[in-house]
Length: 472
Ligand code: NAD
Image (cartoon, rainbow, N blue to C red):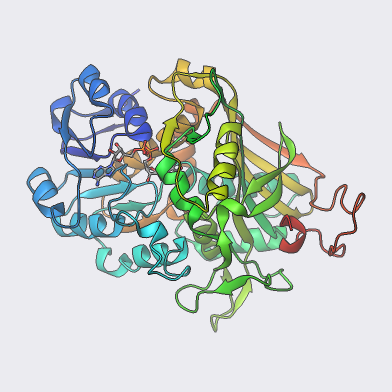
C-alpha cells in the first residue's frame, strides 16, 4: 500500500544497515520515481543493494569542508534529505535544509566525526543532552519552515509513541478519566496524564537475543546494528532523565547547568553502567544505561510545571539495553582495552540464525506496578517481511519510513521531536513490521530477590528510586 506520494528528490545520506533496510520500504510505501533518489555515502558498502533497486549510488564522504559542495547541487526547495549516516553533523544538515527549504529526518543527533569521544570536550559537552540542546535551539529559526524531524528511529523515535500508547492503556485499565488522547502538541496534557497515573520511571527496556552461526572472535566487535554508532554512544557518559520522585542525586551524578535541566549524567561511560529492568520474555535482566536522546526528550516532554515554571512532576527516563550476547562480549572486551575499539568489526546480517529483538517501554510506579509495551520481532519474521533487514534494523527502518511519511504529510512543522508527532499515525504505519506488539503488566520491582546472599543498601520505602535500579 502506498501511504504517500512524493514528487521531490530524495537524497539518502549514509547507506549502512539502516539505509539499506529502509530503501525497500520507501519504494514499497511511497510513490516516488526511482530516478529521483540518490544515495550519498562514504564507502562502497551497499552498492550492490542500490543496484538491485536501480538507485543512483554516489561514493562520497561528507565533511565540514565539502558539505555544501556535495549537497547543495542535489537539493532544491521541496526535496527530502534522509540522514542515515554516522560522522556528519545533524545540526549542520538541519540548518542547510532550513536554508534550502528541504524536508529532513535523522535517527540520532550525530556530531562530526570524533565528537562522541573528543577528550578536549568535557563529559557534559559530549553528552546527548548537549547535542539535543544544540538541535532544539534551531526550533525558533525553523518555525513555520520545512519539517525537520530530529532523532526518529526505533529508539530514539518509535519508543516515544509506545510511551503514549502505554499511558492510554494504563489509563483504560485503571479507569482513569482519559477518553480522548490530547494532541501531541499539548505537552502539558500528556504530562498531566503521566503524573496522575503516578508513573515514576520509564525504561526503554530492550533484550536482543539474535545469534549468528559463528561466535565473536577475540579482537572483533560484533553487533546487530552500527558498531560505530553503538561504540560511540557507549563511550559517552551514562545519562538519564531525572524524575521528581528521586530522593538523592547519585554520588557520581551531575547536572549540566544549562538548557532544559530535565536530565543528569553520571561521570562514567554508559557501556560500563548497568541497571535492572524487565521485559516480558526475558524477565528480570541487567541492561546497559547507554545514553540516548529519548531519555532526555521524554523526561522533558513529560515535565509538568506550575504557572511560575516550577517543576511539579517529571518521570525518570532511561535506556536499559541488553544487546545481543556477542555484543555484550564485545563491550566487555572493549572496556578491558580502556575503550580503544577492536581492530575488526562485524555487523551481523545473513549469518544470524535465530533470536528476537524485544524492544519496548516499561512504565513503573503506577497503580498496576509495571507495564511493558512494545515490539517482539524475530529474525525469521523480519526476513519474511522486508529484504536487507534483521530484527533490530526493521524496528528502526519501519519507524524511519513512518517519519518520512509523516513529514510528507506535515511539511511545514519546522523542527519536530518524536514526542511531538502523532503517535497513532506513526504506530499505524509501523505496526505491520513490528511482529507481535504487546502490552504486559508485571509485579516486578527492582527489589525482588535483593539482599539475599549479600547485604545491600536499598530504599525499601520506594522501589522506584534509581539507587534501587542501578547495579552498584
Ligand atoms: P552503519 O555504520 O551501518 O552505516 C553508516 C553509514 O554512514 C555507512 O553507509 C557509511 O558509509 C556512512 N558514512 C560514514 N561517514 C560518512 C560521511 N562522512 N559521509 C557520508 N556517509 C558517511 O550505521 P547504521 O546502523 O546504518 O546507522 C546509521 C545511523 O542511524 C547511526 O547514526 C546510528 O546511530 C543511527 N541509528 C539509530 C537508531 C534508532 O533507533 N534511533 C537505530 C540504529 C541506528
